[in-house]
Amino acid sequence: MVMQGSNTILVAEDGAADIKLMEIGAREAGLTGLKFVTNGEDVLLYLEGRGQFSDRVAYPFPALLVLDLQMPRMSGMQVLEWLQQRPDLQVPVVALSGFNDEVFIQTARDLGAQNFFVKPNGYREMVQIMRDIKQLCPL
View 1 (tube, rainbow, N blue to C red):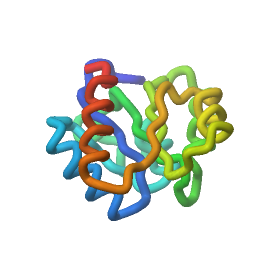
View 2: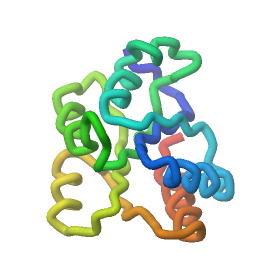
View 3: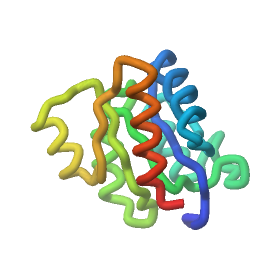
View 4: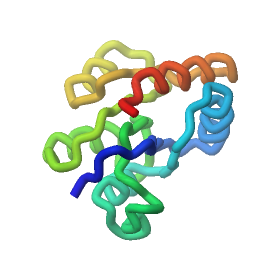
């Protein structure tokens, strides 16, 4: 059962440097409530509230999913495909990738990503992405 009203943003990112940059950028942008997982399989467990994520007080259903599209064990594209089969677990998705390829971006959108950001190379760009995500968040 999906609990509404959460201010949690689930971030699926496998790169330690990218996670650190996102944490710093989010803090600068005033974006709070981020919960991180590092692979696609953990996204599924989190969204379903299973395994280590079964405590919905500690791990509430997210208001937004920020999804790296290249992750181990299950890619972001596979997560998007899985979400299409789970209408009970619908969450707005912001895709994040190092690839800036129109076909790749369109595929992510076709699979349900509402927005797409290319991973930045620096701090200022990440702060701006976090500000943009804050504006998108349905909190």
